[in-house]
Length: 485
Image 1 (cartoon, rainbow, N blue to C red):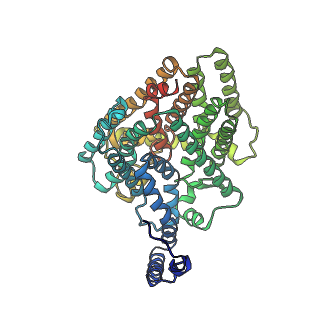
Image 2: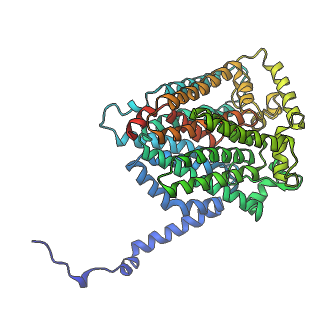
Image 3: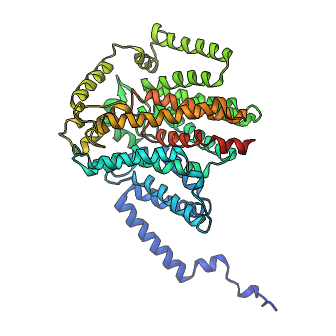
């Protein structure tokens, strides 16, 4: 027989709050909060505010490990920009490493008693990622390398995240519903990024961003008195390129959503704001992403009418920037137009730097060491030859740090994935909607590959994480197609 509950003996919520245990807990938490805020400033306050959400995140992570992949993509958008609001000595980049490693731990625990849990990840794209990561490990022993810290700092973005993201994408994004979730998450943060960029141009930077602009960053983000929007990303170059990338993918995905008008409208908004963000960033090389991306999309569709009309449209855009002065009064259009000028002074400087690197690397087939080239290397090797030559291009960076051998391997991996994925899109995928979505990923990837010749786009977050996820999806179309059928 159940014991009857006496309502008069039951403690109310207010009674519990008056208990000594709760008062002691509240006092301890308050003192701890004061100490954290005094020691860490705004960063500490943000940690305390986000603590409940962190606990909730861990709950969902171990319940649904795909939460870790979504969290990594979100972090890719905001992590580097968030560093502006914290002390410079905090290694905020390690948060990505922790999130990805915890995701693997959660996945293993969740499927501890199951067999063959890694089977979906056993793909050629995983092997390629492992080879590229292995080459980066070998670069640790490069006789030209002088800083282990520089290697560790740069290696993560170059190959470690690729090695960690690709298997997770293969394991988790195994049906069309999850693929749609990936596009939606990407679209939401692309919209937020564009809105933040618009705020920076119309309302001005916030106090923390202003402090960042007062450093050397201001030299590249304020041109002739005009601010280049950088949103909450690492810099204007990454912001512009990523928004152009997002716009290309979103616009093509919108074509696949004819039966779901709300989603179609959503992706059209993503695309429109993405192009606006591209222009507000003043990133000249970003214009190559829609030009190359859409041109490739027309080829993938195998439609003569679409190819002709698309080519005419792209030629019109090219003529607008190359041979007219329409909109020249607008600083963003004027800066974008310089990307089509072969005599542009910055282009000539890049060519001259590449000549210097060519002489230096002639006898160094494995490069000068990961993390040893470009402006970022000055933090570790301020007086080294490579750290005093701007690499600008992603491929030039790979060439300078990993030599002609590393560059050849890297290009082989990129083109292998792109060509094989494109072949499947054109001749193997049966579902027409999935075909469009995969064409969006392939077109965006090619656009980023082209733009990476002018800027180090491909290896910087969030673009890098989106590209790595796309690589996995492009070579997992058989599984996705069977789920869609």
